Length: 207
Image 1 (cartoon, one colour):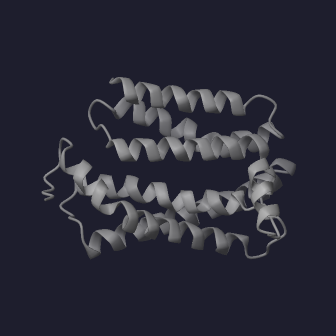
Image 2 (cartoon, rainbow, N blue to C red; image 1 turned 90 degrees about the vertical axis):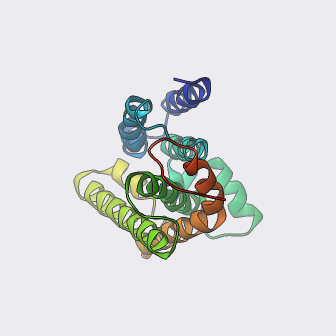
């Protein structure tokens, strides 16, 4: 494995290890960082056969850092979120909202890459629509997981939900993930196309 991917794995492992030191709740921490424990081994073991673009790898690292920080403090109590709340006179800690934008932004590029490299789809309206729908579906599935956690769990599940008293929290979460998915494709689509065109198992031609 090349140096940069190794450094990226090391950064994620270090972030998760630090986040595990004295979190507010180990139950909440486990729920929040579970996607990292699932995704990281898959990415490591498939790297030689299917290496991801540099852009996609760094976005995944960023998403992992967001999850690790939220797992340590819980999303409703991340300190930087309180600073933003006070600065803009908001009603709640916005870190949870930010995390759900990321939940749409990063998976959009991951899904986009998989579709471009493993299917006949090319950049265009169909790809844009399918990536968007997939990310919205992932967000909705995550809300169902949160609901199941609330039914099964206790205090840790309440922290995991992080609704902060908003009855429309789930709807806001899905909307923000949708906006994140749209934003990622609009902002990074061309850059991503160029990187994908240079990857193996890709027939994409980009000027």
